[in-house]
Length: 373
Ligand SMILES: Cc1ncc(COP(=O)(O)O)c(C=O)c1O
Image (tube, rainbow, N blue to C red; front, side, top):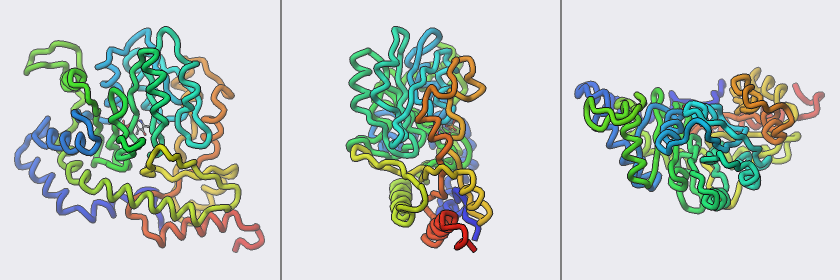
């Protein structure tokens, strides 16, 4: 039995009739650019995230970039973000000409260490980007409190948190803007690239609509320099179908995570991510930490079980960010996680036989060598 890391084929098989109908409708209307399905999905997603506005954009990186542009973050500004995130969070900051100011994460929750936000603030700091990593919310209240005292924007990177609740508030509805990715493997994934910015701020929403579409107010009337970063109509049509299943898919993921925890508790040197009382967890990723990551991954691979590493190199050690002048040892928690984290197969359709096999193989790896046959 080959166990994939993510199984999109099985997911699409369960809803292919609806997806095909949605695609067919776009093909027959030929409304490929900003067709009515984009607005339909924006409304559905705004309802899901409980915000007044949702602006469909080309991908998660552009969602962050556009949010920063719309807030006038630019050259000379600094934006605080965690060192252990996907590089897109930092790239969005660089793309607007600002400087990513990295801070370490909490070693147990993997999210931004909120006690490090205030010490990182300088006269140039304009915004903070907490990342709700793996599907669990960062601790937003202390971040909002520090940000409001210092007049900073809080932009949520919710690319891994479609449906996560922070104290009953959906991630993406808490900061001035929430930025989502619909990369295919996300909890809500398109059949290609896609992204969304959510906000309750009407003037910000208006500006985002302009900025994603060449800065135009009306056709051929460009009031500022924007991007071509619109959500594709075909993707919007597909996402409108998929968003209806998102809650049930998130619940299935959480159930699989609970099974993994049951089956793997006390096995080898495995450590699980800490679950916190202030957030739900939609388990975009199920991660185990181990000193023996490489060998365990090799063992699972030879048993046809696919795993992932999210992420092997923290931002401050990426060659692309050598200019920031950080070095190894600057963010020890982020570095330790980068060396130890292994993501096990996780997708809503994961069958109990599959998760049991994964657990069995992990246990087999950690069993005393002479018993491993
Ligand atoms: C935390 C985080 N931020 C941003 C992104 C960027 O999203 P995209 O791949 O859609 O550009 C991703 C996903 O890839 C992500 O995981």
